[in-house]
Image 1 (cartoon, rainbow, N blue to C red):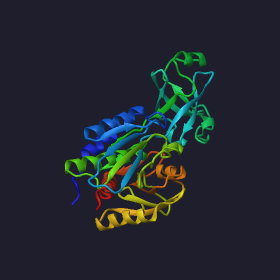
Image 2: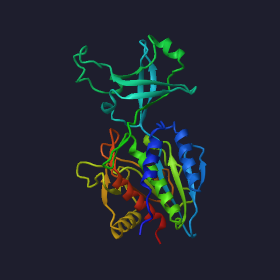
Image 3: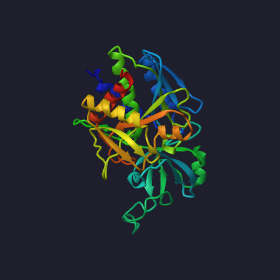
Image 4: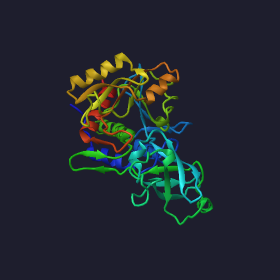
Length: 346
């Protein structure tokens, strides 16, 4: 019998996380939000020198030490230069699909703490003016940020306190439908963070704890490739919870939990993958086993850093990753169940 999963808590946590801008490196407020949630559940919480959050969960027996990992950093943009007409050139943080953010609202976070709003636009933004408005490639060179302030030149922008290196976060547009779909940017990987917290809540509500002492890492640089590199010290194994891919010859859907056998960095630990599959089979979860050739995870970064730790990867099925993403509540519930099976298994 599974511990009861609080779906309201799950959805509220997703919405709370999505309301906090957190492109890679700019995650302090999101990490604090997660820390408050962890402390409410009665767990110790610490923040590493690199800025990752770590939830420390006591196990019921000794003999092994395990970890979970999910990332709270998202895709984003950064001010590359200030243009003579008072607009901003930008550079990508991570790998956003730029055509999908043409026309999106955004927030510019200055280092002084001021926040300005704006819009991401093509440099041929109007079909009434530009003959290539529909065909111009949406690339860093062909797009810019229009600031919602009365600025006519670069000096006007500088007077606002906007400078090169400022973070630009675009709107996640989060919506949860009556039919159970969660539509939002950055479900990769804030949905997984929410799944971990919901799993911990379900275990607390049922008066249960993990079998082994568990360290749960919430990383802040996954989207740029090195979020999980410091993880693993003193652990026997680490399970990443990140998005499952959908499309081409993959089996995953928006209703499944995905177990990844291999990604772009190579195969995951054979025994761990087999064990996770056995948990899913024995408990009749909606799950798939898939391979993601254009994918990397925090566990992959940990292994490349040289840690002698077994590693595996699971996650909810996310459609249109790095674009306008969507999943279903069933996928999140299946993921939560597999997390609990992993933590509680005897």
